[in-house]
Length: 302
Image 1 (spheres, rainbow, N blue to C red):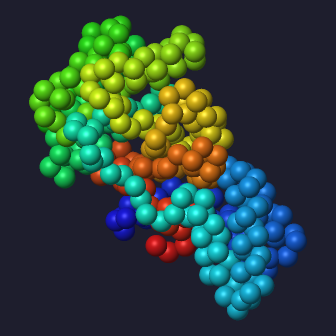
Image 2 (tube, rainbow, N blue to C red; image 1 turned 90 degrees about the vertical axis):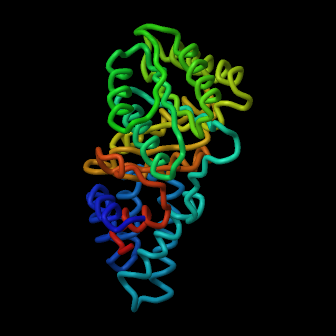
C-alpha cells in the first residue's frame, strides 16, 4: 500500500487508533483490559473479536513486559489480520471475459464514484471497462456516471429515467461481450419505495445478466460507508441474504470512521474486503491490505 495512502488511512482512523493505542500501552491488568474491550466494542469490532484482541494483548504483556508498547499492539494487530482473512489482498478479476461486477449498496455509500474509480484503476492496467448505469430511479446517478465516463474516457451504457434496471444491465453486459471488454461494472440502485422492492429488483438484475453472459454477474460487491459503523453490518446482512455477496468495498475511511465494523462484517459473513477508499480522487481507492489496515487502526507504523 502506497505510503501516502497509508498515512491518509491512519488519519481517517485516528480517532479509534489514539484511544486504543493509549490503552494498549498501559499494564494490561483487569481494569485496563475491560476498558480496552469497551473501547473496541464502541469502535464496532463486535464482542468476539474484541475479546480475542484483549486476550492477545494480555498474553503479550505477560510474555514480554519489556516491550510494553509494541508487543500488545502487534499481538492485537495479528488478531485483526486473522479476523480479516489474512494478509494477502484479493482483488483479481480474471477468468471470464468480460468479467461482470455488480456493485450494490444503499444510496450515499458511494457506488457510482466507486464504479468510476474501479474503471480508472483497471484502465491503468490496460483493461477495457464498460460502465452500466443501472440506477435508473435516480436521474442524478446516471448523469454522474456519464460525467465520470467522459472524464475517464470509459464506455457507458445507460437507459432513460425510470427504465427497467435489469434491461439496462442486460444491454450493458451484451455490449461488453460484443465490444470484447475485459470488465463490465454495473452500478445498481440503492433505494426504492420499499426494501423488499429493492431487493427483488436486484435479484432480477442477477437473473437477467446471467442470460446475457454465462456466469454473470461474476462478482457482487457491496459498497458500504465506513462512517456508518454498526448500521453497515445490518446492511451487509440484508444484501448478502438477498443476492450472496462476494466482496466488500469500504468507502469514506477518511474522517469519522471507527473502522471495527469492517472486521465484524468479514467475521460474521465470511465476505472478503476487496478495496477501501479514503478520498474523492480515483487513486484514493486502493486494494485492501489487512495488515496495513490493522496497523492503521492501532496507530502502528506500516
